[in-house]
Image (cartoon, rainbow, N blue to C red; front, side):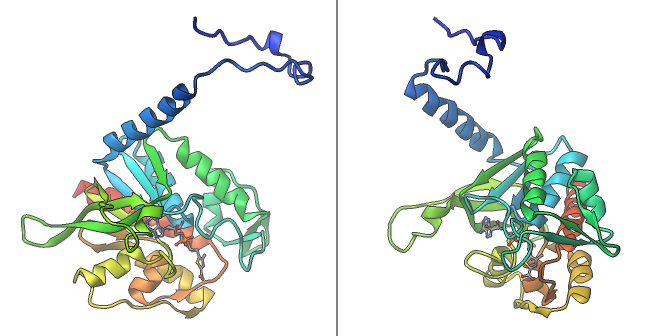
Length: 291
Ligand code: AHZ
């Protein structure tokens, strides 16, 4: 017999925690099936997406927010290698909690609903995690956005278009733990998500960073990496925003991955450029889809 949820009246929270709290009964298999069905239905549906965003750091999430909000008709799929999305934006810099955002990028904070202290030329969010968790919750609440975390992009789908040009047409994915263990196991073939537009937001070089920039070089679509230059906040932030573009047919690049692609300076712990670059990447994605 189906369980009838108790009404709020007979589950007065002030009374039922004292030994009388009762859960609805459940079968373990129901829990498994509730997750499996939704997850694999999503994988099935998103095997063909409109836009894939690789990397859920501050740039990738800002892109997802603007794109998801402006184009609710698009199937936007975020693939994040880490279990925890957010990239470097859980802390401000050197493991300190406040996050600095130079104006006018604070307008994005206002739009998303992240409070800040005004310092004149810049603003400070009291904890970077407040920015990341708020943005994440906005993005994941959108009906048209899904995120697969603990899933790595381990290659790009690169095809010839009708003019014979090489064109990125999707991503090759695997569970991150599998992607990290190809050398120790056999038969761990990947999966694909095809999409007319891929936005790469994998950050600067590191264990997984700058993924697409490096793959473009090994695939012959880019001659060489520019390699990230030293820290200069005033040069770095506008350069990253201005350079946000379709770097190869079908592939838009945003955030600090661009510093490796183009040889831009790094900005250190100021995050406004990541937000503005993400928004520009969303606009570039819409432009690419419309052409
Ligand atoms: O896990 C990575 C992180 O969450 C994810 N990622 C990397 N490679 C991936 C792959 N498949 C799937 N192959 C992958 N996901 O991409 C995310 C990158 O986030 P990030 O915070 O490193 O980059 P960002 O460009 O969004 O933000 C950069 C923030 C920085 S770095 C910096 C400096 O060093 O000076 N300054 C700022 C503001």
